[in-house]
Image (tube, rainbow, N blue to C red; front, side):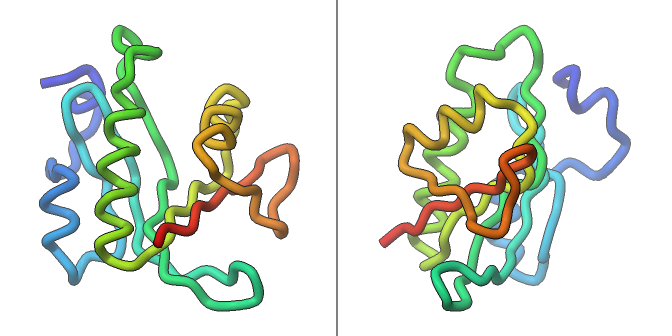
Length: 125
């Protein structure tokens, strides 16, 4: 059990289980050294309604930060979003390092978010 899982009493679900549970709109998912709050949503992007998979909160265990844990998860997340014909939406980014990382990966700031707490998205096709 990771430090992240030990501090949370919710039922444990991994990403694959969330994807298969099509009836779930949102959930905390737990994998090795990472916990992420994800959501299925619809967003208004580029003057149209777009189905999205959202990353609403990300917690990476301190002892593995900077070692590619989130990068590997994001790759899987984007691949699943693409299979589902959904965009990826990252809510309210408070970490400037994460924001810069996502911008380098092709994410775009949502026009209705703020520079203080930006939201980014990536259309996948």
